[in-house]
Image 1: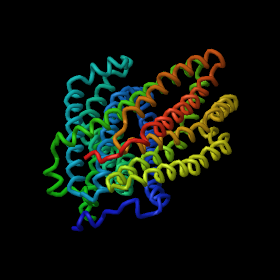
Image 2: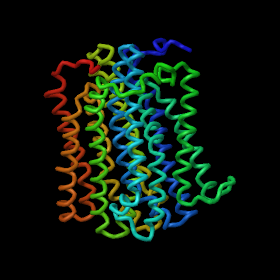
Image 3: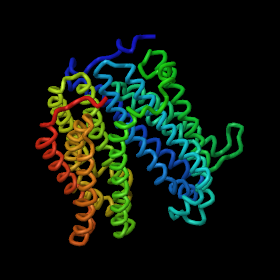
Image 4: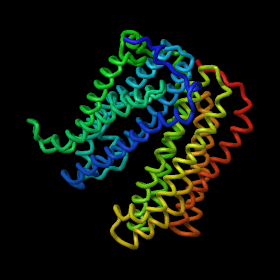
Length: 458
């Protein structure tokens, strides 16, 4: 097995644009895989089991998203600490941080499993699940919650791997998970592998098996490569809640998780506003969102990369490199995200035609897309600035800025502009919020953060 220190390389010794691109390609592909997996699973259930089953599965989304948001938040905190330890060339500390994070993720998953097994029906009823799908929704929810520990550990481990500059292993593991899940779901639905037809529970069981396969693949791959996060004796000994590590993880991770939840809830409010304008507006919203999501993937990936590289640089004691890391991230966002924005404008009619068949709805969707697509570039700029600041452990103010811009700017603007301009006013609220975010994040970066003394967190 290789010495973990031999694997270590610091971003300070390589051209930053090259390091960014090495991160970005696997991360963007991972995002696309995740999106396609969810879409195809929905198609399986809707086509093979019907609308009734799809409605039952959809009722579980808010609960699953809550736990995933929490884990992604905690994972972001742990990956910052791991990035700093990795930059300082301290592999044993990397293992301690990873052990604490995985133990915490597994504990949260166990709590979710127990609570889901006991209160699944009550939770589904509280979410307003229609009575005619409540029994199926309860069965699906109970099984999903039972498998939650494995799902959360898998998501968490992929984040921790990125903290040590490994974005290829998460991509390959996700490819295994997606392939197994998409192959198993229809087989389990129909009972074609020696089991009775499992109906709505098939998606949950296929997800469990696919995640187990992906984790097994990761364990074998990491051990063969002598990876610092391979499941060896040292890492297994460190699978415990270390209070010295847990504190910084929670301080960085919880605000990030909260921010994700707020964003999700705000999107539900926006959707409710759109729904007031009728089914055609809702269809246009769905089609536009599909395109916007794919344009956002590179912007979010660049921001995550900026955060990881900044954390590694802080760990290496080379804080003078933070400025170039930020500038490179902003430049790549301008080039990559900007190119996708331009491409989106150029082919919007054709792409929207893949989702929408009515000419009037397609024209409406294209108009709405043109109103706000450019603002994804602005969104990417502010995300990069926030990512660099998060790498130093400064998360509360950037998080507060984002939450304020969503709750205090976007939603009021959407309501006010909807009353004044109609449907297009709702979409104008997006660039209003994103521009405000960029102005406030940049002001905090220039006026406060840049003048602080940056130190390692652990």
